[in-house]
Image 1: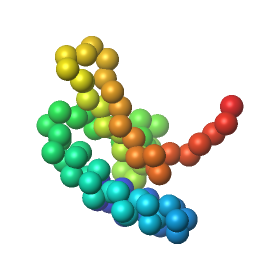
Image 2: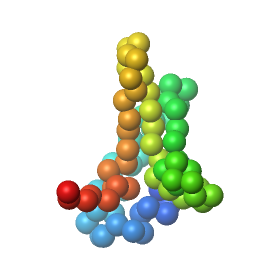
Image 3: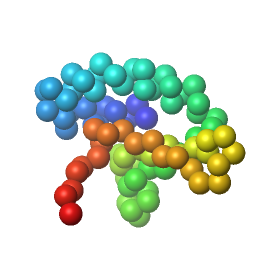
Image 4: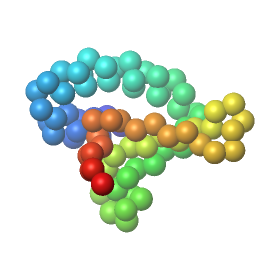
Length: 82
C-alpha cells in the first residue's frame, strides 16, 4: 500500500494532493485495523499486467453477507462518462 500511495500522490494536482494527504492517514489506519477481514486485489494484476503499481481494491463481507463490499481509493480512479 505504501508503494501505491507513493506512486499515486504525484499524479494528483496540488489541491487534490492536499486533500489526499490530509485524509490518507485515517484511511490507512482504518484499513490496517481491518486487515484480516479484507481480500486485497491489485487492479494491474486483474488486467493481466505483471506490474504491481495498479490500483488497490479491498473486499470484505459485512455481517455475514454473501456478496462482498469493495473499497477503492477515489483519487486512484479515472472517471469516464458513458
